[in-house]
Length: 388
Length: 203
Image 1 (cartoon, rainbow over the protein chains, first blue to last red):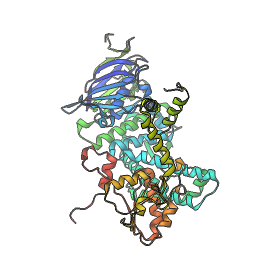
Image 2: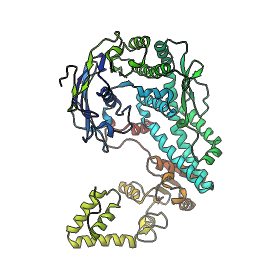
Image 3: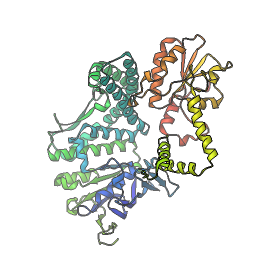
C-alpha cells in the first residue's frame, strides 16, 4: 500500500501542510527544526493513532488551536481510501472514511499500515524493559487484533491484585479472607497473562530469523544478533521449541504465583507475570545492552524494526498489503557501507519514506523524489522553491 | 470553569448538585437556575420526595434490595420461586432484570463488587449474609448476575469458589451479542466472547 497525499491542519508546527508522495522511495529533505519528523509522525499516527514521540495527544495540536486534522489518501492495489483523523485532546478523537460521517477513531485503524523507525527506537536496545515489552505487544496486536484487549485486561487485573497485596501489607495481618480474594485475582491474572504471553511467544518465534538476517545484512559483522525471552515463568520446551498453549501457560503462571506467595506478601507487589519479563537482545555471546557500540546499537534497533516489517509481510504476503516503511533521520548516523546496505534492504518496500537534514547523506541507490521541506512564517509548509 | 461566583444559598445548591454522580459544574449550575425559576410547588415536591426516600426507604433484611418495609416486595411475594436466587451488584440491577419478566426467583444484592483499588473486599459486601441465606434447603440454584467487567467477573469467580462446596447449582449469565444488532458493529471482545460461548443448535 502507499500514501499518495498527506494533508495536515494545525498539526504540531504546521498551520497547514500539503504533501504529495509517490509509491517507492520518497526523501524528505530539510534543515533541522522545519518539521520533517512531524510529517512522519503524522503518517505514523494515521496508521496506529499513536505518536512515537509522546504518549498523549495534546502536544500534537498546534499551540493555540483546539484540534488537529490529519488527512491521507491511502492506495491499496487499485483502490483508494481517504482517511481523516481529528485529534481532539481531552475529548475523543474522530475519524472520517471517504468523507463519510465522523465516527469512532478506531474504525480507521488498519486502513493504513506502517512501520516507523526513528532515533527514539534506540531505546529498544539501551532502554528499560518496558520499551521492549511494548514493542512486542504492539506487534502482537497488529498481527492478532483480537488480542488488543489482552494487555489492557492484564494491566487492570494487575492493578487490582497489587492494590490487594498493598492493602494487606499495610494492615499487617494476613487473614483467610485475603487468601480467598487473592486466589480470585491469581486466577484472573493467570488467565489474562497467559493470553499476553502466548501472543508474545508466537511473535518472538516469527521474529527470530528476520532479526538475525536483517542485522547480518546491515552490519555485515562477525556477531550474530539474537534474543532470549527472559520470563518470570519457566517455559517448557525452551526458547525455540513450540509455543506453549494458553492453558499450559495459565497453569504455569498459577504455579509460579503460588510459589512466590510469601515474597509477594512481604513486598506487597506482584512479582510474577509478563509485566516483569524482558526481551534480552544479544550480539554474539554478549548482551546488546551495555556491550553494543554506537553503530551496533543503531543496527540492532534498525534490525528489530526491519524484522517486524518482515513479520508483517510474511503474515499477509499480498504485495498490496505491505506496510509503508518510514525511516526518520537514520542515514546520517550510519557509515557509507551501512547506508548502501540499508537502501538495498528496503528496496522492495511498496512505499518508503525517509527524512534527512542533508541530501548528501542519502545514498544514490535510493532513487525516488527528493522533497524539500521548510516551514513558512505563517506555519505553512513550503516546497523546495519556497512557495506554498 | 465555574468558580464560587454566586452568593450563599445559590452557591450551596450548585455545590450540592455538583456532588451528584454524572453532574459536572456546568450542569449543576443549569439545574440550580432551573430550580430557582421553576414553580415553587414542583420544587418542594422534589424536596419532599428526597426527604421521604431518606426517611422511609431502607434495605431489605433478607436480600438488601431497597424497600420501604423490613423486607422488600419481592421477598414477601409468595408466588416467587424460592428455589432460585439471582445475585446482583446493585438494586438497580434488580430493576433491570425485573423488566425482563423472565426471572421468577428471588434476588440477593451484594452492594457492589470486589475492588481492592477502591478498598472493597468480600467483607464489605453482603456475601456472608448470602452464605447464611443459602443454608435454606429450598434454594437449589444460584445465578451469578454481576456485571461482565473486571470487578464483576472477579466477584463471580470469588462466589463460585465459595459456593463450590455447597453442592448448589451455580450458573453465570451468558455474555455475547446484543439482540437485534448487527454482527459487524460488535466490538472484538464481545464477538470473541460470543464465539467462546457458542452453542450447538442441532441438538
